Amino acid sequence: MNDATTGLEAADIVQILSYLPHRYPFLLIDRIIEIKGDESCIGIKNVTYNEPQFMGHFPSRPLFPGVFMIEGMAQTAGAMCVASKLAQKARPKEVYFMTIDKAKFRKPVVPGDTVEYHMTKLANRRNMWWYRGEAKVNGALVCEAEVSAMLVVE
Image 1 (cartoon, one colour):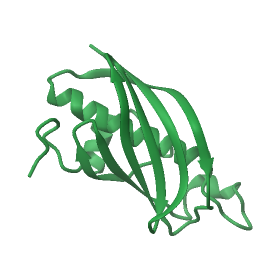
Image 2: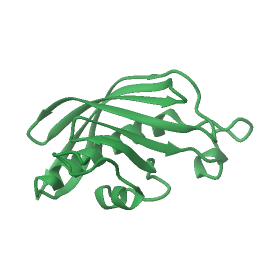
Image 3: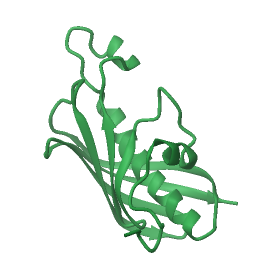
Image 4: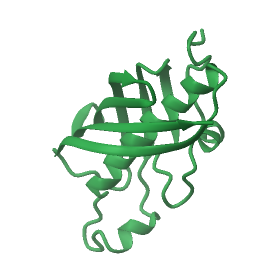
């Protein structure tokens, strides 16, 4: 069953690439496994050792940078908002990451982990969206934050 707002239940990498301007090495989500309009979604990031950040963060004990988890949350929420706008026949020209609040890093993320970005809408006013995000690995909370974005619609 498809969501009535976006027409999507999930988004693969090809769809994500059509929603976001990000590309390797800065595209930080691999797929979205669940979309509920612009209300909530779950994005996935498969962390692998061959990613460039592990050359310097840190060679003896590779850790996925916390700031990348925050960006992964923002990209997941941004893709969801773009999908929602496309369902309304409005193509966003740009998506801007606006704020980060209440960020907390709970546990390290390492190569081999699969990070799930659980994003839930807090508010929406005109072209601004606010989301609460929780990053989880195997069900354990590793990072949380509130993020906001602005969509510029043509």
